[in-house]
Amino acid sequence: MATVMEQPALRRQSKSAQMRKYGFFPGCVAKESCKELFNSTLLLAEKLGIELVELTAASCCGASVLNDTNRDVARVLNARTYAQAEALGLDDVITICSTCTGHMRAANKELMESEAHMGQANAILGKFGAKYEGTVMVRHLLWLLIDDIGLDELKKMVVKPLNGLKVAPFYGCHIIRPESVNGWESARNPHSLEDIIEVLGGEAIDYAGKTRCCGFHVQLEKDGIAANMVGQNMRMAKDKGAEAVLTPCPLCHLALDGYQADSAARWGRTDLPTFHLPQLVAIALGIDPSLLGMNKHMIPPGLVLQSHDLAPAHVA
Amino acid sequence: MGFTLDIFRYDDKIDAEPHRDRVEIDQPTTMTVLDALEYAKAEVDGSISFRRSCRSAICGSCSMNINGTTGLACKTPVSQVLKSDNSVSVDPMPNFQPMKDLVVHMDPFWDKYNRLKPYLQPADKDEDHERERRVSPEDMKKLVAVANCVMCATCYALCPVVSVDPAFAGPAAIAYAFRFIEDVRDSKRKERAAQISDDYLWLCAHCYACSYCPKHVDPHDDIIAVKRATIEEGLTNHAGPRHALVVAKTIKQTGMLHESEVVQGTVGRFNIRGLLKQTPMMIRMVKAGKLPPFFLKPVPKVDEIRTIFNTLEAPTL
Image 1 (cartoon, each protein chain N blue to C red):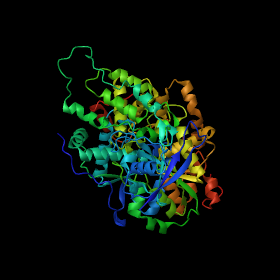
Image 2 (cartoon, chains in turn green, blue):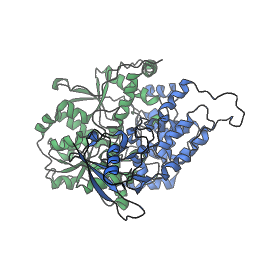
Image 3 (cartoon, helix red, strand yellow):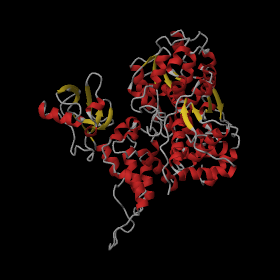
């Protein structure tokens, strides 16, 4: 019979400037169709003076669908990833994807709370000489920016304020829900993205769609479903005056950036350019937008950036 | 002391458009939203309509939208939801047609539930019974959470998939499918799995909006379990299970979720019509220079990943 261990903490104390070395789990989409997210993250990390050690032998987190096939495999795969971080002496695994965040944290919670799960994982990891001690915490880059760098410090680093750019935060799902797994902030009323937008000199738009689903995970199940979910949310943002969208998740980014073209028929044209979190932070911190993959967006953000004096004319 | 109740008013037999009434409630904010509605109805306007019965989160009647998010009025203290202008807005549940004020037409919700044949169908139901049908505590444990469902439809109202596609069964019906699929006394596992699969089980977008369940049923884990049951029952000739199994396959092969292979595997490599439907998105991705790679080099030590899959006998496409 498994004994329940002490409830693991949902949030880590901030790291001092000398200790800012983190395990880095970019996830699959940032290495495949959203490489601009991966590149922007590395550029931003350099600017912030933090060291991201990429876990190159890590596997996919399970992307929320692996649980549909087998209830254990994603948990054990993630235990393997955490063991790799521990072997490198790292206790933080930083993600840049909401789905990675939610599912890796869920796996870690199960491992920490159940000796049976931890035992099963380590029995399999033992076959190739690995062991997970249970010291890792999975954190999103968004939380690192606020907990470790701090909003005040970030504000001081802004050299190119967003000049009132009206940005709609789009949290999506897995970075806030379920609250028992994420718990970094209120799932019903989060404000971390708004805080970041305002510190960078932008104006955060409040709209009901900010915590709703982008539909990415069902885009292939039935025609038009993701486009409809995207259109519904982007309509709300546009009606509140948004000029652009900011998301901490590359899956949301693919859906929002890619499906607004298909949702126009039902929801009207919205055409809101969507930024990855590190892209917008990097712009405000003075990194040249042309290095941040602005040309890798399906809805080009160039015009919106130029209208706020944030990018030269040659940026897409 | 005192606050304003901002109430959605509408009668689908009379009104072309809804309007709102603001009712001043001269009472402490420690009362629940349902208490406030009862007070408004008793003291101010007897025509205000809403459903309620038990007033203690057992009957599931009083689910409504409170300040834009759905929950049980009887379980929500006014003080917890008071807006900065000292008001609370109440609206009918979204994803339903309003009938009168806060009362909605529940038929689509009950239809989806009834399609499940929501009663036990044991193999020996026609035999004479001398003994009760017993279940071990271990077998019953996994059904305890879903047994707390009061069918208040909060999850259905919060579901973003239902909001764009009413064909989707919704979280509560799938949780009830789980309740019978996982019941050791029931004999219709495969039929039930097929039924819920046909009711677009796989349209669940994994958004966890149903984790706001006021009775902590949290249907999302049940939905995942029902998906596994459909795969176990061999009901895999469908985009949903193919998607899950091809994701598993690419992770086992390369360590990564291989995006381009997942699209082909889900839609079907020879499903020309299905693949054609993906082409507008593909063209947009090509134009933006972000088409994912067709070939992926496996991550270092991919053998370890395969060992994990093989040890757990995890299925793949």
